[in-house]
Length: 252
Image 1: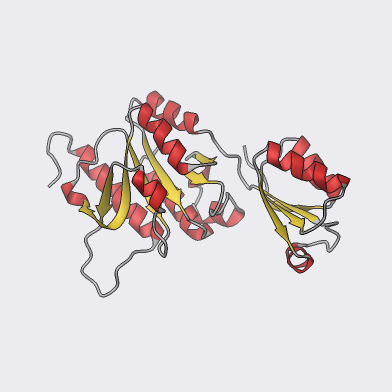
Image 2 (image 1 turned 120 degrees about the vertical axis):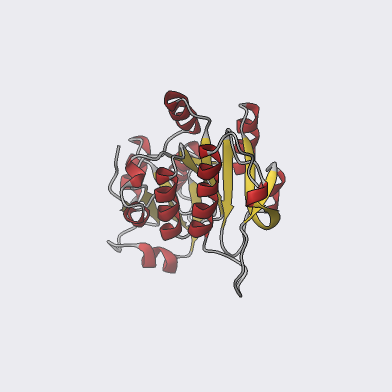
């Protein structure tokens, strides 16, 4: 199901958006405003586990398209989010071990869109992003994905570390992209696997990394020490593909 990405402005409009079940990625509220209607809106936002940002009036004015925001602006998702269980079900239907991409600190919509496109082409069963410090399913993400967003489910979770722990109980294991890790060709990347990718600048957070089983490094021979996040995701995802196409030969 597709949604058109848009901002929702004004107290009644934002409240009705929550109550009607629209997928709201973020809510911006005038800092210091705690009257009855605003408290009702923030209560609804918390019920839906929506990120709430309290900002000064200047920031709201900058975000506003109508200039009649009444102290609240909501950002609706362009596409509906899936559940992690949907991805596991998809893998089961295909008769394949689950292959998921988990993204930490990816805030650039073009990176997210490109990763969703790669995930689709590599046969991954879904992409998981955190609710905080991450771009949502915006129109820019959809455009960059070149249509892949219509076929590859994307889930948004509260806590990546907890999600990894729960998926481990279901038999999955996790490899984290890290320049100080083991060269990817020396790892066995077959089976039910989650590939964890961080941002180009910060990489994967320490807590998420601690919950991964292995770290994988992409060999590089140039003068800089990092790849764009979407490129790194593509290189590692296709190493997973390569190894699964050769199930008898252990990766060297």
